[in-house]
Length: 408
Image 1 (spheres, helix red, strand yellow):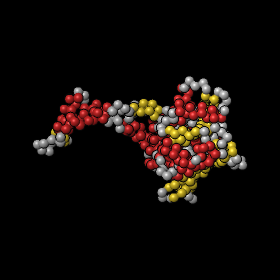
Image 2 (spheres, one colour):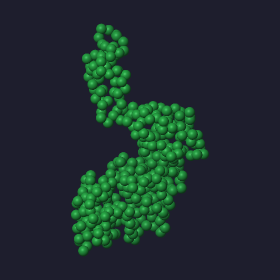
Image 3 (cartoon, one colour):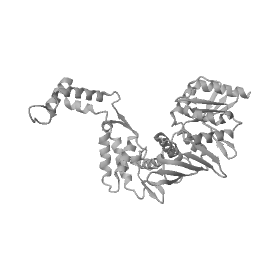
Image 4 (cartoon, helix red, strand yellow):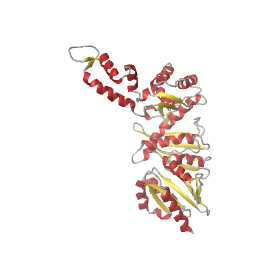
């Protein structure tokens, strides 16, 4: 994804309009996209700085192409690359060695300016002799750990080079949500998929059933007591998944220091084309580890389902993260709370109170568990389990057994 520094947008009637390249207005970018992807396809072995220089050379002929757009294309192309890096720290080690060997020859000068000092060429020659390597080889190896000197190992190209332009348009839209206060989505179709993408991104969300649709309210990073870049990135990652769904409209409030609160609108017919996020992909390492560890257990008593049900109680809607099914047929819902605010936890407890007839286990991050305990709403749950950075599966299984035991 792009950083804030690479964002390009304009404000029209207090509404944010992200930079977008279209076939009609920016037809000249089609052939250039093919040339840019060809640079990377044919650039195996070249350094990152060499590749970026070639991209700039391609786009420099366009007077209407701002520098931020050039850098954005480089960033998006780099995301599809695998570079050779100095993972073992050999460059840093070599630098320290060279600087140590150069110390006795200080000051090192390009030409003699008196009786003191050592010529640069002479110092390099002596250092090379000690290391037993040509200086040119030493110079090339000394700074391989810098990103601009990483060499391209592999590039995952687009099926069609125009895909680079589509990716650019989506990326500029994603950046907007780094500063979102809130987002509201009205979904007529694909509700389950939209919620799944929101859950995969671990977004704080509320669902309300309306007459002919569902209202999904998402808290944005600018709504948090302490705005976190991690949550902003999570919200931005949600956008491509949303764009792959049908039958929805969205509006968001965006906070900008210069402008105050601005609006942003999006819908399934906006023309943005995203790469469909695989259904099995996890955006939460916590959830991925939990699901994988469950699958590795030889547990014939319980099965875990990710395909969750949509539960209704009046206007309240609850879609649990997981559902554990016992061999006896008993079912226990599992809900994981990651990002949170006191207001979000209060709403979550209120929703759970509407589903007292369901067996629910709530997995709560340790800092939030005290808030949950203080609300008293945990009485409607079978159990609340606290976790720090990892869900302890043995503890959860024991709680599940207690949950179905209390029902029998």
